[in-house]
Length: 207
Image (cartoon, rainbow, N blue to C red):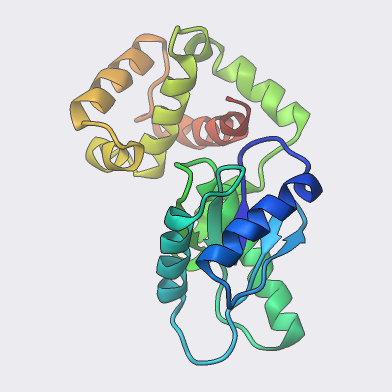
């Protein structure tokens, strides 16, 4: 399991508060700083990955950490090598959930190839995304439109699923999609979908 936050912070400085909140929710599981967040692992009896993800989601709902947290869960593994691989998977999954609502937890297998989008970063890519989506970002609600476009693309064009993910009514998403189209961005064009998806994921952490 891996926890991270979308906020820019010093992991070391936030660790005491995060660990304290964790120990109140899951006192039997370790939590240690690792890379850009905090790692934990479930050991002992047999348990399914979806059960781990559900338990982590419930724990995050109970926790009162100093920063908003989202989580990712890797595949079940054995031994030190397996743990490293599982944590690497969890890191990628958390890179997707941190772009969603705080408290979101998803597994590596649930996300599939979408985890690759979480690895997109770097100043060149962000700068390119800002150029590609300049007309969208110039709107008064530009960041909201970018987040909505990302959700619609994540959901294969389904505005109902995107609405559920964003926690808004479907008509709200439909209205936003119309404003997106009015600014020259067409999420239905096959030759543009991949580039738009990449641009959205590059920008979401910045918005």
